[in-house]
Image (cartoon, rainbow, N blue to C red; front, side, top):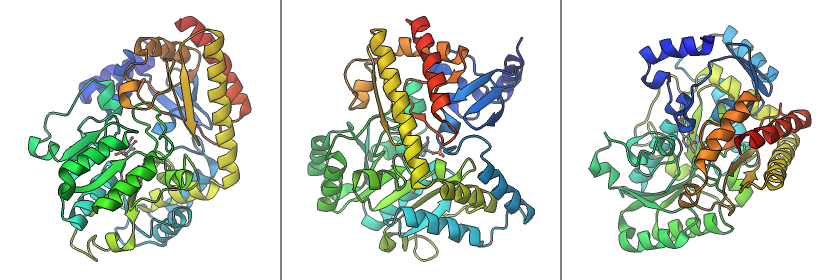
Length: 425
Ligand code: PLP
């Protein structure tokens, strides 16, 4: 028995599915997860010593790669001063300023520890600000596991084929109205029917939780116009897209300004940080300035702030441009491989997020994504893993790029994936 298999056997005694977040169990690819020992740059090694080029990168946060020196140095320095205080620190202010410098529409913010906390709190705030209870979300968009969002959520929920989660009260689920992504008319129809009830539209501006789906030109601007017209707030969930699709996130890339923004992943550089923020008049409703309660023992934790700050500081426009060029090279290389091997294939990228589907037509919605050849994806995933390329273990997840992935890693990846596609058929 491999060491991975032995550790997973013990893990399954302790944790549901042997994991502490469902997608890690490899159910989407009908496989057995490996157990990781360490990471360096673009690569990880499992406990049996096998090496992989990693395109999951802790599901997005590690934009500088594993064990990035600036992050380790910042952590080392911060750690010497103590690991947690629950008292304001300058590091929080510095990270807040770094976020606002890149996203000026995030005038005020609140740090939390997970993307779920950020989106949950943003919706509470939107409800309080507008005095309305309903929200609009999109099929296949995942916004964390708070009750209001486990309605037609993508990602792990899609991987496991769960429509809505048991345990979410019907009364709450009925306040989450859903529309297909890239269908502004469907959103208009919902507002026509229920305009007085809708507090917010929440959207992943580039969907990363149903595979990667790009917004059609004008779609995000249409959402902006609809929300403004009806007195609802527009929330961009930039937990995944923030600092990835452009230095200033999707708001910068698509030139659409939301009222509230949620951030996570990259903002913590691999430590637990997330945030929600936006217009000052809205954020001033948050306690203690306002009545909307939200708190956290470890919010603004100094180690997490230090890792986030080191990451954002290192992520210069030049680094971002180099990463985007590598992402484009990978995606174009994959297209060429698939074409040569006559495999139905469509791929896309936005900044340093990328994705592909085994289907001929581009994917514009979750309904489209579901028509892709998932069986072929499973075969391809395992063939890639065997050859030392770790892709997300689900057909409904995005891929990521880091600054540690350079042209040699990309070309090696393409060679391995070419062989993997040949083997997967
Ligand atoms: N929002 C988006 C767009 C996400 O991709 C995720 C997680 O993948 C979340 C929210 C939830 O973040 P977390 O897993 O940190 O709770």
